Amino acid sequence: MSESEVRVRYAPSPTGMQHIGGVRTALFNYLFARSKGGKFILRLEDTDRTRYGEEYVKNLYDTMSWLGLEWDEGGDKGGEYGPYVQSQRFDLYKKYAEELVAKGEAYYCFCDAERLERIRKIQTENKMAPGYDRNCRHLTPEEVKANLDAGKPYVIRLKVPLEGETKFHDHLLGDIIWKNEDISPDPVLLKSDGFPTYHLANIVDDHFMKISHVMRAQEWIPSTPLHVQMYRAFGWEHPEFCHLPMVNGSDGKKLSKRHGSTSLNEFRARGYLPQAIINYVALLGCSYEEGKEFYTLEELAASFKLEHLNKAPAVFDYKKLEYYNGNYIRMLSDEDLYKWTLPFITGTGDAALEINPENPQPKPKVGPEYSGVALGEDGEPVCVDKSMNMSSADVKAALMKLMPLIKERLKYLTDAAEMVRFLFTEPAVPPKDQIIPKKLDEAKTKEVLLKAKDFVEKIFGMSHEEAEELGRKMSEEIGVKMGDFMMPIRMAVTGSRVSPPLIGSILILGKDEALARLEKTLRSF
Image 1: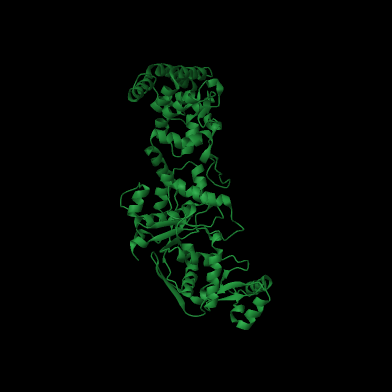
Image 2: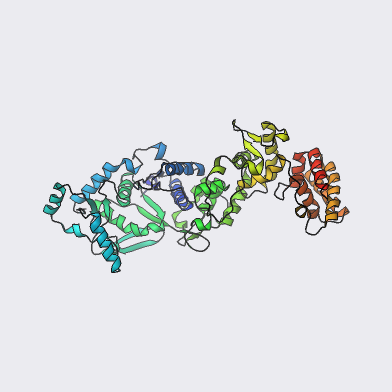
């Protein structure tokens, strides 16, 4: 198959929010298509109407757009092989299910729910393998006609060969051989309400959309022999298969909510950048250039090869993702960092996305409650504390000045809310035990705070290096370490141990306000 013919698809069922495993499948399909100059197709497999939700459809497109995975066909882009939504293709599925019956590769089954339940019960009680007993496979043409003429409800089932084996090649796992007796016995292709099952719709769509490679999770391997048999029954050539390695948690079990965030919306709500998600997820079960850690989406596409996939399951490491996120935050310009952090500072946009209450990770501290900044009706930031006398322009200017300072400290975009608070509300004086360093007593801490007034008076007009040197010199003068000198000042000026670099914070806050906060703290000693 030539490279120009590569056509792959991501075809989720809109029955839940997009999760990290699905994103990895979509990403690998996207990278493979781009690496071969092929097409990446987005298709909705919405045959499960009981769990279907419009919000899940929206979430699919939102997720792909947020990640920057631009699709070539499907969704709002359309394409020559549409429609790309299975519920809009039912006539096609019915036609081809009936064609299999006409070819003798499938048959009408008139067994009602009561009989099927009886079979299930017998199989369970006798510890027999589950599945249909093929009762209607042996009906005569006359019996079939009589049932149809009587208007009896039916499903259409595939005739799976009773003997022999099914063999297919997987790009990652090599040749796979499956005994036909182990394939699900004569599964339903078309349900009695005219809805196709997943298997029928999937095969028909892949064929008519000219999908060249099916790349999906290894949990789909047991379905593949059935799919190969369906292609054989239709007389069609099946696409090439590549079953991707599983993504596990740190305990070696399949990644789930008990490990931490799994839905993409939750990663967004927890302050991850799309660049970090893309870079880290691309490395789950695949290698690229040796010795290189950081890749743009374009670089990943240029380096992606099926032969670089790993057979072993990948382990999702939240600490490693945190490392990537922090690094990508530091790569942002101040303007971009402002754009990305503002929703978390104001509690809007991604900060308002749902957080799973069972997640072992603590809930992010975001929004006006933690930052002192809200979003005005005009979309600009406003100071909640009116006594600060800050206009919207003042708030934005102050935030922009803070961006280069907080950039070095952020692990997540969510961290920004608490870090900026000291500028937009006058903090209460913290309890003494939080102000006094472990190696100092109350009297020495008061001496530090008195010395700090002189420090604050002098640093305006100095470079950062000069101010640091002054702090070092003053700490030596009163016989304390630099860290024990700075910590009480930080608590007095910002009211928190979570703040941007202290000297820069004082310079943005202003001399008068910084001195006033020191005086206020000293009054408690």
